[in-house]
Amino acid sequence: MARGARQDFVAPTGLLRIEDCLDAEGNVEMPPDVTLSSLIDRNITFVGDAVAYRYLDYAGADDGRVVELTWAQLGVRMRAIGARLQQLVSRGDRVAILAPQGLDYVAAFYAAIRTGTVAVPLFAPELPGHAERLDTALRDSRPAVVLVTAAATEAVEAFLDTLPPELRPRLLVVDDIPDAAHVDFVPVEVDVDDVSHLQYTSGSTRPPVGVEITHRAVGTNLIQMILSIDLLDRNTHGVSWLPLYHDMGLSMIGFPAVYGGHSTLMSPTAFIRRPERWIRALSEGSSHGRVVTAAPNFAYEWTAQRGRPAPGADVDLSHVVLIIGSEPVSVEAITAFHEAFAPYGLPATAIKPSYGIAEATLFVATTAPTAAPAVTYFDRDELAAGRAVPVPADAPGAVAQVSSGQVARSLWAAVVDPDTGDELPDGRVGEMWLHGDNVGRGYWGQPEETARTFGATLRSRLTDGSHAAGPPIDGRWLRTGDLGVYLDGELYVTGRIVDRIEVDGRHVYPQDVEATTADASPAVRRGYVAAFTIPAPDGRDVGGERLVIIAERAARSHRGDPAAALAAIRTAVAERHALAVHDVRLLPAGAIPRTTSGKLARRACRAQYLAGQWD
Image (cartoon, rainbow, N blue to C red; front, top):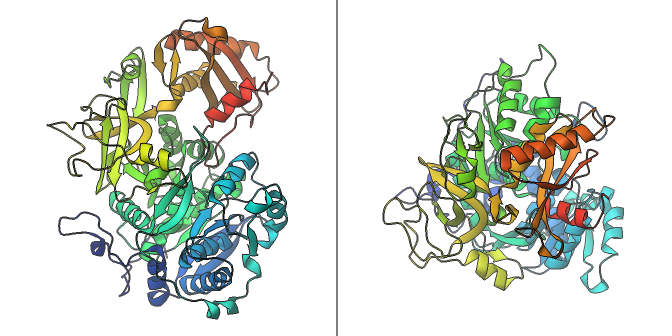
């Protein structure tokens, strides 16, 4: 088949149809019998011989060893693991997955769900720098069983030995379970409102908490994503290196279950070492049909730097959809990636700036299928004061904001004054509140925090132009903690409430200071800067807070004298933001902590600074 050609795909009878999940008005409404378990059972029945998941294993071969599971094979593995699980657990027990990235992880996750337990997707202990998050999640969820692979067993056992005896779960090594065990599996009825899994938050702004995600929320969110990004062509497949314990990674293995399609997976390590592997996998998918992928800012920047194919390489990205999200989207990341890969057929509309949050399963908003990424420049001081005032790109104090497009169908996102509960008009910055069936049920074991975060009520709605019209007057809303603004029908995410810096009585977005720092000197590694405040001694300074900037050195700059770079950073921040920098540190690459999804962990960075780690 010629490069770029697309095959027609006729949906086999019996697979889920999108229209089955829409009511008479076109709103998303999941049928009571549609769960992740039932979707997989449909695929086993009607497209059992088709590939479900493909894993590119780079652990032992530079060019990658391809491992595949058909839907029928997945069903056998899922039931075999489930049969052994049923000997150890009761319905509703938590079952954690602490395994390396791979098809065993996928089978283990679905097996936990298929047995009527609550899956807890986590990671093997060898993931560097995240032992505290793993410890928190295990102590919080208290799994009865941990699913592991033989390769990870020793490390997992050693880690579990650090827990109190009453919290130590039993281990089940999934790749030691023979396929023949599947005959012992006892089918379990799963309700659409049962909890599918606990999605632990990334921990970027507070200790991780487990969001209770129901089958209804999963199904609703997958349908919303398919409709918003126009993935209605059943010959659309996924490519992902994202961690399978992350909400975006789980979505990339979830949407093939809706379609009976497939996703190609690889490990985050394989991507980081050679980002061209991601591009090659996308190109291969693009040659057979549409292919969708997702990643945060840093991945697009890294790939633009290190993932360009050799001149003349046979790479075709003409049918690729690239979701960029997980934090305020960077215009620099979009520009760098498009400039690098436009020569390989990447359309101007391929990159889809999006907004998502774990508490809403994942997906909230994205740009229209036929739209290119939209960037608006706002006045920095006005934005800090809560007003979105567009200015020319070259205006003094102009700050770029990338649109997240439109909110998903059957989801409401209102911009609200967080102190009063009043909906704010377009052009005013406030906290984004969400209402819809894709919103999780609450936080595991935290009723007070659940009531505060998932049980908010609007005090007032706008009489004209309300984004909250539809839900009941007394409906419950999710407080996201994220700041946003509507302008000209587009949603812009401006940052997080807890991340905002207050110095000298002024609010400043940390990402603005971080961007200024990266622009100030070539010695700064772009995307690896953290800005935060610390208390002034005895509160003697005006505002009571001091600004600290931690930056990593760019490649090949570690031998230079940092004095010039430090001075340039101080000067740039003073000129652009009228702020004095109390302290700025230039550190080796890898020093700044990041979450398991690659986002800056400003809270952890601040804690390390206050602990004197970099003194």
